[in-house]
Length: 157
Image (cartoon, rainbow, N blue to C red):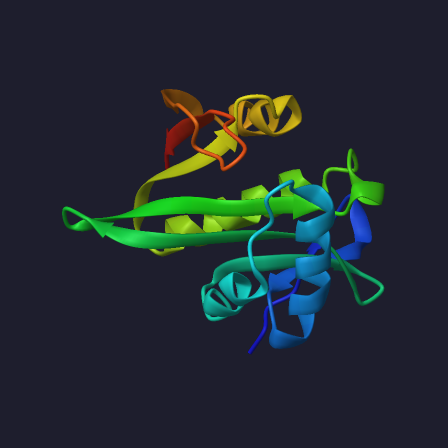
C-alpha cells in the first residue's frame, strides 16, 4: 500500500514511495540535472527501498530522493544517495520536503545518523543540507568522474 503525504503549503504536491511507472520520469530528471547521471538500472535496484520517494503534482514527477540504510555496529546508518528536482521547479521547496520525508523514513528504520556526498561546488545543495543540520565531515578529492571533489556530510537523527 502506498502512502501519500500532502504538504500543507502545497495541496497539489504529493510525496510517496517510488513505483516502477515513475522510473522514466526520474531518469529524465536525473539526466537533465546531473553531469554524471546514474544509469537507469541503478534506480530500478532501489525501487523497494522505503527511502526512494517521488514528489508528484498532477500525476507528474517533479523530484525524487533515494535514501537507504546499512547496518553499522548494531544500529543502521542512513545514506542519502541522490536528490533532484526538475529544473523548472527548483526554488519551490520540493527538495526540502523530499529530504525531510527521507530523513523521517530513515529514522523509522532505526538509523542513528545519516551521511551523504555532495559536490563541493553545488552551493544550493550544500546550503539545503546545512539547513537540515548536516555538517561537513571530510573532503574526498576527485570523487566524481570529472575530477570534482565531494564533501561527505553527516548528521545525527
